[in-house]
Length: 141
Image (cartoon, rainbow, N blue to C red):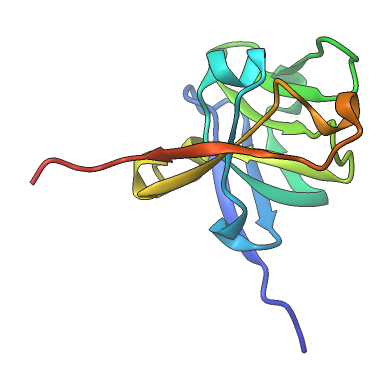
């Protein structure tokens, strides 16, 4: 059975960085994380496999940030500062893509977003990744 990949275009806020992301599981993989960096950043992400993020324009404007073990590479536009994606620490063969950068998508499109326990990261504890909770968006009617 052939898997249908969800291909989305995206960009940073100023439009300098433009990319195409192939989401292997579509939006079934959305999540947030409780680690110090993700907690402050507040982004909802969806997963793309290695090679699943193709920078179409502005690669020279992308810069990276690494912290703690330095394994995860967080990419953001050096002009507007928007985080576009990162190479994951727990699985370096996956990229997490900021859904807010994808055309026609908002983090508020998802009523329930799983929140993973990044404070007690699986690579630090040796335990399986734990779900810390659910972020719920309830629009006013």
